[in-house]
Length: 157
Image (cartoon, rainbow, N blue to C red):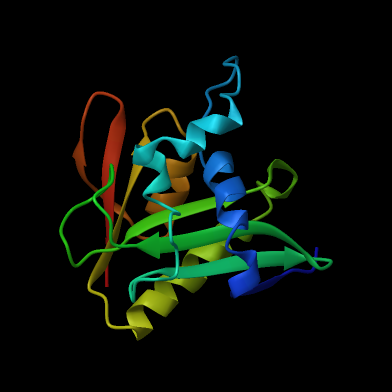
């Protein structure tokens, strides 16, 4: 499958709400939450007014002229927050594009972008039951903390 990873364009920022919803981990056998869930303040912190801060960075994946995935970072006080200099990492793909290596490639592109911008590390939070945590380990994230249901992970540059 041919795809292009590129920077998010100004007119595409509203897509981040879709990808925020897609990023919500739903265990097998569990009903999908209502799409309204993304408007909770603890989730809107990931996308609200995106692009207005210098630490907001987003890459998208495009297939046949359609954006099918996004990886974005910003410095926020979220579940994976480690300090006020470390961006928090979010990534998602539409279901038909998962398991094809696109997510890994998107992550590597974002890590390279962050290195080039001089960041020392990036963090994220992932539920322990989410298979994606293995992908994070493969690209160099380390588990630095955990609670009952989640790992806090950091990638150091």
